[in-house]
Length: 353
Ligand SMILES: C[S@@+](CC[C@H](N)C(=O)[O-])C[C@H]1O[C@@H](n2cnc3c(N)ncnc32)[C@H](O)[C@@H]1O
Image 1 (cartoon, helix red, strand yellow):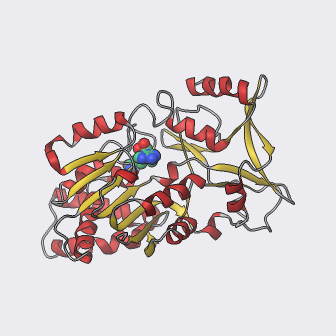
Image 2 (cartoon, helix red, strand yellow):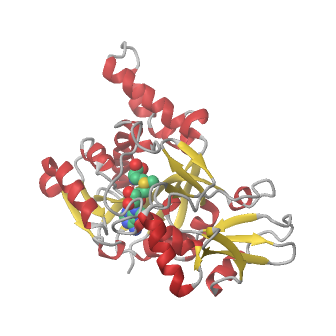
């Protein structure tokens, strides 16, 4: 039994049941025993999963190109910065900072992550600053970037019983341990989101609703900076996500590059994640004042962003370093790797009067 499992059993003595969103929040972010709480885990070959950042420095190089383009779109303001959230161990920050001259702001609520990032980014001196929340970001022209952030936000689990939606609550009993029990929908906000789901799904259809990601989208829209917001993650459109064949939803746990749906096991020792509902992210952002500029498969978007760099390589045989970057380009853009399952959403954020 993991320490987090014990914490949940103790908590379930007093409250009898918890929403899965509450369990997932603790399993990922409990400061001592959550998967992400104590500090940045290894990502990549020796970790539990790969991300575009762990593929290599080309991703940061391409995002530096996007920063330069965004600065030009904003008519070269005298001050422009890149803001990153979910900076993890600071690897993407290092890759972007090495490829452009802009200042860099990291939104980091966890002091242990900030300490790791500070150490990694020391050589960039005053170019890097930290703020604890989006509301503390500077009121400056900026490019906001995040890679694989909303997929790591808590979700509620729900099941269609043939005539109504029920929420899956987590309960504990001696023999069964932690288990799911159908019950009423926990909040009005969740019920409102559920009312957008198709009603013609088969009985037993189980899925998730990511309310936390929608709240984060509103926070982004209300943050003081203006410019562009770049969000990259794996996910679907609303219709694809809630299609009849996806009848167990997308919630999965990851450990050592293996994935399964045993989401109440080894809590705190495995990553828990869901595919992002990009349609709702964009709708909520737009309703809060943002404007969708781009929504694309990552392969198509990064493929195009990388064309000027590819053009510089023409006519000369690639050296070993260039060959390594070309392999990264392939991993980031090829449909069989990260090009199709990952999506990019870019929103414009106007200056608030
Ligand atoms: C799947 S990892 C992605 C890490 C990194 N961006 C990458 O792509 O390699 C999710 C990250 O989101 C971070 N995170 C979750 N909620 C956050 C928040 N509210 N503010 C900043 N980081 C957050 C976690 O600590 C974790 O580092």
